[in-house]
View (cartoon, rainbow, N blue to C red):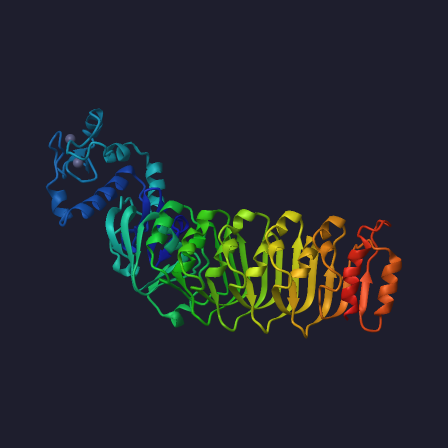
Length: 517
Ligand SMILES: [Zn+2]
Ligand SMILES: [Zn+2]
């Protein structure tokens, strides 16, 4: 039994689910023997019985009347075995080698390529044993079926094979994420009413009766695997209605690659609170299905940390967070403009993020900043832009000055080229900034801001201003910090080089800020 568990991808009661090249085999406990046969004839006998059971309503009668198609020996006189899976004829052990010389063992139309007799008579006892274990303790060739309404396994009496052509209907059922994904990858799935998905560990039941959110929340939360067969998976996803699979209580939801496409099909409880929500789509096919749904229609409930990697950033306008959501972290990082193919066409202030405590946009992802709309009473603990190369500001640099409303911000960091975004930002007029941090250490980093007029950037009150690696000469630094010493502090870190890297008027821009303290 242990072997069966190891070979199966899911279990339920005594029923085992196997992932085989030919499809998904479901083998109920009642057809498994507990003892491994030890002779070749014993294996062949078991297989004959299985085939007889599958093909005939009265298998015992069929067996009683069977004779060898060559010599006419009766079932009682010799061990006889079917010549094909359809059990059209039988052959005795002595006649089998002779039959196999003619190629196909059964002359019936449709059986030309049936090699049951050849395979089974030529297998060694070790090969029989290995197959027996792989088949979950049976010699079965489970019957391939066209239609299956997945139900609790106790109603499943016979072994079945679910092939790519098999239509599997899900209705009033909860199933494990592993079983759901296997079905989506290997069969045609029709999702009906009251279908939900939960997480389970190996050995736990993979099917449960359909349940409402309350019951679902008592089960393990689902965590979705990677998709192996994306062609079938995507066909199934395209057929599946939106919001058709319920998820219980989920603390962390992570979808990668093709699995991202299942997102619009999932329904979360509206009061669900996620610690972390992460999507990773590294090519355009990984999110194509999510583009068909309306904006703000994928309801996520409350989310503390939201991360959309690579192309997944395009899904942001489709998401809807709980009205009172307070996000701890919204961090995006992107180096590739191609990842923004969809979202870049969005209007300014069109994507509602609600309240966000820490907002960090790196490199090309700063391009979405003008599109984001924060809650008007938002108070950010940290706002950080880090831009490594000038090409990453190609989009945002077109935003109008003072057009990006940030509300209240405690710590503001503009790293490297990020400093050029400064004129675009507007803070709440009563804002008191704890820390304002700039670290452009090369002249090229200030390529844009260098053109800003003095006194044109208003920043409210700042308690601590840190201008790192600035390379300004210490005389200016010391004098200015002295001037404002009683109202706040300005830190000028010395650069390694003694040569001023910035023009004095750029320094003036910042000094103007300080004087507003
Ligand atoms: Zn014979
Ligand atoms: Zn046949």
